[in-house]
Amino acid sequence: MAWAMLLPTVTAVTATIILPLIAIFWISIKPVQLADLRPVTITVRETLRTGDGQHLIEYRVRNSSQQKPVANAAFSDTIPDNITPSPNTLPPECQINNKTIRCDFNTAKPGFSARIRIPVTLAPNTTPDTARQTLRNSAPKTQGKGDNILTNSTFTTDNFARIFDSREFLAVLGATAFYTVFGTVGALAAGLAAALVLNRPFRGKGLLRGLCLFPYVAPIIAVAFTWTTLLDPFSGSVNTLLVQMGVVASPVNFFGQKPHALVMVTLFEIWRYFPLSFLFILARIQAIDTDMYEAADMDGASPFQKFLYLSMPMLLGILSILFLLRFIWTFNKFDDIFLLTGGNAGTRTLTVNVYEQAFAVSNIGAGAAVAVVIFAVLLAFSLFFLRFISREEGL
Image (cartoon, rainbow, N blue to C red; front, side, top):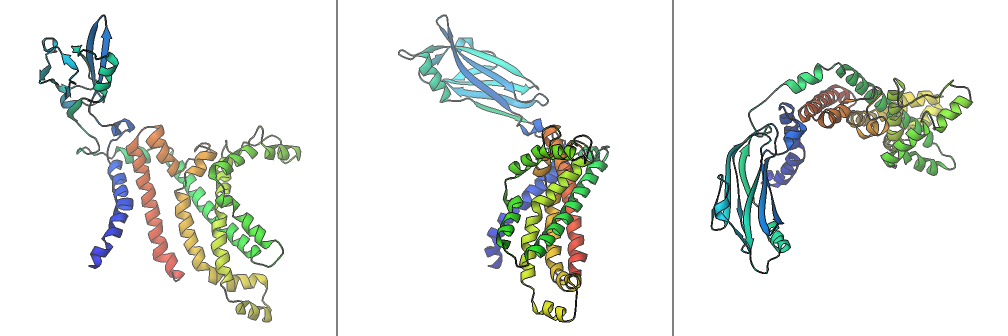
């Protein structure tokens, strides 16, 4: 009974998590290109042509694939009652039986294309437009079987070899590590600082707390466009101020050259996601018993000593959880970098590499292989964190 009650939950988890994960692993060892996602089959387009007092039904038949044949390729079509075909003019591969036309092509080679024209006679009071409408209501039925790379027994390790043999892989891995580590630590540090400052009583504290949430709740497209506009080397106000103040001799292309681009997208990550850390840390600080701080004041402890020996031990638990979550989320982050730099100027992380391999290069298998690498890295990090770090923190 217990398993029966858990069945809906297990089914939902399997459908939403496990099955897509299995599919990614499966695709990563298949030589799949973007064009391979289109099914290999026979397509038929039926039209009615008129001219010089004659009427023809034209079938345009083709193999949808340019690389793979279709075995047992054929189609059948039932002619409407208001249209009568001429059985004496059928092509050799076609035959008619009770107004049902069937054409067999045996094996349709890659790129196969054919036109079959059959003279017909329209019934009295039937216009060509009416005949076309009836033809649209009775579409031809196709048959044939083409090799599907996703389901056949062909496997390969070329996808992983292509990734690890790439000269850019170490650069991509380094950019990912820099962006993830400094973005995570920076967001936690900024959130901790904001929580400590805004925990003290002063006028306007509520307003400032609300403003701190703006980077997190603002639309990503809007804030990314704002950053790129302000830091534009030609028309950005930031560069104009820096040049006029004599800080730099010429405008700086913050998002278009190394290493500025990687530093800027990391700063953007810190600015955008520190409010989440701020909220959790502030809530934990407010839950700390104030009697400890009063006793520390009586003992003459400095603010730094109170923070180091009283606040930090109480915050280590929430900081550990936030570090784990932010590390995973930052490692998987794609939209921020893609909107700011498109992965150029040394900001191509593993997630951007998934997009580049799968869609820019049209290699779905290589993109899935990069996704498997991301999964392996995050799984190893999570196991290490939960095995050692969280145990030390008592989580």
